[in-house]
Length: 268
Image (cartoon, rainbow, N blue to C red; front, side):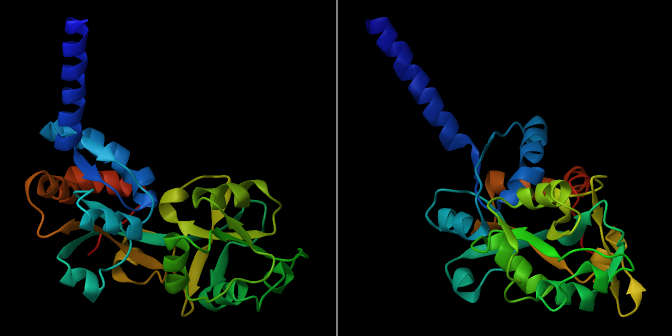
């Protein structure tokens, strides 16, 4: 019994020591799913440092950072002055482009920024306004309106309230699956990292000021593509120790490959 008690105590101590030594990430769920699992694996292989990964959204992660319950947070907006005053520090490392997607059966390949705004504000309600073919009412598919992801996209794309009858998904990746599996009248928007080159949906080519600007590195980095969000890592105070090692790793060529493989883009 004494031996078993000692073994149990040692195991508990080892688990506690691991938890305290692991670099704790909390923040953007998009970043967690798209890059953090691979990044943590390659970072451990390079530096021998474990990571404890959790994710919900930017605001939740920043609260955990301020409470001392996370070492590094990821998110999709610049810090507010009040947050900077509390000692939070940001570093922008990559860009996320918002993809406009439709069901692959829809014979529409490009839309102007004005047409996209018209769809999202309910001014353009039917596909026959945009195509020679007769199609039914446009159904917009979006992330949950209460999510930080939705709120960020509302600012980036430029709409206040989606038209009546829109489908709001509980989880952001579900936007892709709804557009993919529902009838061909759906129109969705979400991070390019959730879509990339999947052949089951069509990424619409955006036309801005009369010029087509497909989602690709040069258009996103230059600002020619209009629906772009900067992505950040945040720390409480200037990054140091393992947190600094991780941010430097993500800024290295190896880290950049993780980002671009996931469907993100690099700043100029």
